[in-house]
Length: 90
Image (tube, rainbow, N blue to C red; front, side, top):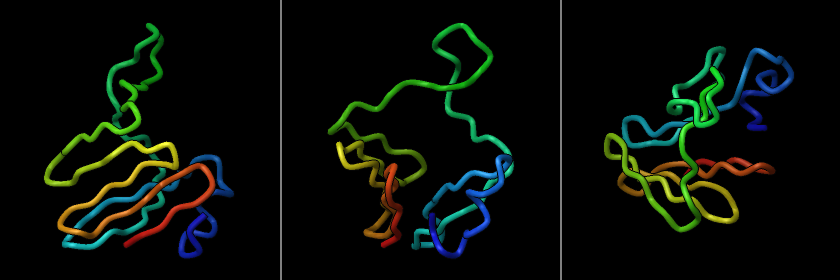
């Protein structure tokens, strides 16, 4: 859990997210879902497609690559890495 969002993970209605804005990566604490695509299993819960390891997707100038160690997103050399056990900005 990023230290600047210390209470984000302790509240069930909050979730940690990250984005690249204005040439720098930053953490966010969200209180509502982010659209991740239509459900794949016929339920009402979103989920979208899985980005396979080694694949990259580019959205609004930010490139995200799926790695076995987590997902790395950057725009012009600035961004973030998110994994199950750690998050970092660069």
